Length: 282
Image 1 (tube, rainbow, N blue to C red):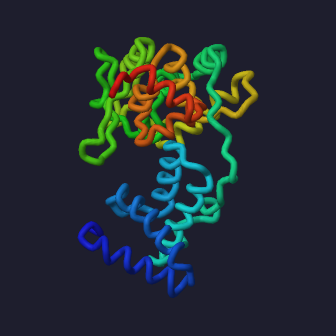
Image 2 (tube, helix red, strand yellow; image 1 turned 90 degrees about the vertical axis):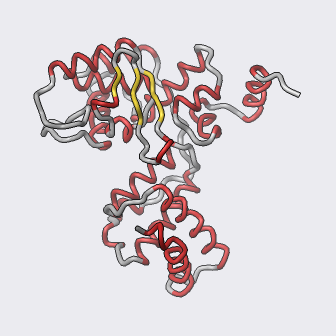
């Protein structure tokens, strides 16, 4: 609905920052630009806490610095403040990320095997194999419907909800078998969702996070393993097996190749050599 009044929304926001917050014109312009990116991504009205958390995870997935993410989240906090909805954002959601962010650290082959071996259910096995063999985000996994799965071709349709931004993820044969086994043994529940919680509802991104945390805790692995770690592992394995960064970028669903460079821990000079290796131009 706000699409029809986008300019009015931004004008009101700028006015709020100037009058209520007393910010400089430069800071107001920066916050308004960041807000526009947020509004472009979310067209529907949803709880502020849910939107803010999801957008922060999106920015982290895209590899933005913690400093940029903190500034963007402050702009969004001001936006909800201008709407009188600040109480929807608990203090935990306003906490700044540390200025330095640790780069993703891929799992070793032994660690992957140990985690997969620690899965307690057919569902958990399928989820962990999807994460490590496709590199999709936890939000993308949670959003999967049964109709998005093509087991014969080992394809998952990742629906972004933004017109032509849907993409395809590929899984391994073992992963496809794990999904098939899970579906055959799953309780008969009226739900389009591929992965369900113990209560029969669609599994949430936080549910995916908790599953990974719980499974890793049952192993001898002592380092911090997050869903992002599976994504970094997927990217690193592709690189080790000869995939170029541009193909890896597409498989990860990155908008910006700099995000892919962070996952692969590449320097700009290395990207130049990668380009020269695969492109013969004029």
